[in-house]
Length: 292
Image (cartoon, rainbow, N blue to C red; front, side, top):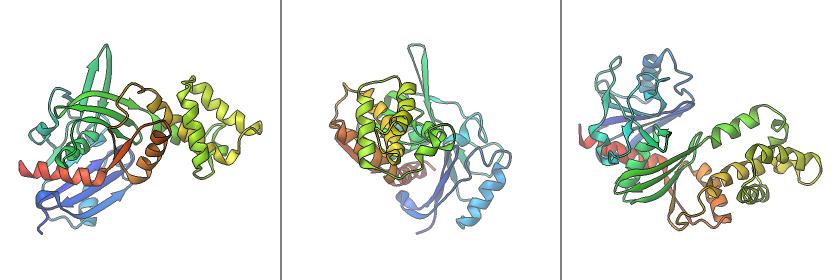
């Protein structure tokens, strides 16, 4: 099959790419840590290196989503209003001004309600792919650096809530008083304990301090702190949505992250299904290709 489109999910920290043919069939894939922050100031050279690594022919159309289209990225692209259906994304691509020909950026979405704002870039492409794969309206959870809970209705983003879960977890592991206790591995018992603590809706900063206190006081195995904090942070997301339908929650993301969310969700009474983010992204690329 002849390669027809290169799709890049160019996030803040990581970058993933797929070379697809007709219908979004994946021909080659690639991943590195050359995110928008790491590539800042040399985006064109970084893209060229990716194309060489993937053996992408000159002139192949390129569609990029994620932080690369933010104010801190290559070229800022205005957000779409949530009233714009996801199916309109292929008609909403923005050409890259200072880059290769036939290179486009996917706009994200912005929600304004009650004086508050929420945004997403990159997740909209995965959601379009989920719809293309036949998944319908309902609640989607997209775990990641900034976890997203999205309610789709009639193919539109009806509600969007973002959490700093992944970024906060990484920062807690990198430094501070909790870091030495978060060197252990995964523990189902610790994950469950953290998730159940989240259902009590504690003040999060207090609960995080207590994660260390319970270990140093001998009330918990220090080796479970990693999983306990993970369960506490992820469980906080679930605890914030007690009134939603717990039987139609679709996890859209990488297998390992979705497995953690599924375990926490199951412990708290949620019935979760999983959609592979890479498969969804390629399905979305198939939709973009139809409009080119």
